[in-house]
Each structure stands twice: as C-alpha cells, then as structure tokens.
Length: 140
Image (cartoon, rainbow, N blue to C red; front, side, top):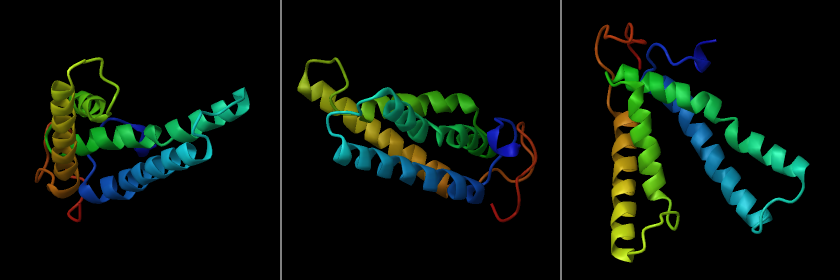
C-alpha cells in the first residue's frame, strides 16, 4: 500500500488530507489524556491502549512527511531536523541549566517548526520528475 512506503512523492493535497487531521488527533488525544489522567495512566491495559492510540498515527505521518519532502526535492533525512526541532520545542525537557539559553533554544525550535510546517503545507512541489519519482498530480 502506498501510504506506508517512504518511496515516491506526495503533493500538498495528499499531505494535507493525511497529516493535518492526524496531527490534530494527536493534539486532541494528548489534551484529553492530560485532562482525564493528569497523574498518568494506571494499569497495563490502559497503558497499552494509550500507547497504541498515540503512536498509530505515526505509521501514516512519517511516510507521508518523507514523500512530501521528496516532492519538494529534499531527502527524507530532513525528518531528523524536524525531530530535533520538536525536541527543542518541548519546554522543560532540556538538561540545560541556564534559563536564557533554554528559552533561546525553545524559540529556535518553534521557529524551525513553523518554517518547516509552512514549507510542507504551502510550498508547491517540484514541477516534473525529480530524483524521487514523477510529479504526483497537477492538483497537488
């Protein structure tokens, strides 16, 4: 099935129809989890169910992100830049002791995430065939 492969290209339309609803699912899931169980989930069954509900969308998000980057002419290795930006964006996770440096890194992470999101959602793909395959469609 094309949805689970890292090969080929995905246009803006495919990216927006797959990734954006899944990202909204993740935000809603995490917010609901925080409201319902602020001290964490207790019990192995609930923990496993929570893990599956949280991680399942990534089976679609990561391949679609990789193919969207291919459509823009970039390697899927740029997903590591996204992962690093997400790591910087998470407040309070860093082991850096200086608040000024930690705040600066968080601002850089937010900036990198916004720039990457604008590039993935707004920027049109390369016209014609590139090293990753043919153009997805004229509507993408």
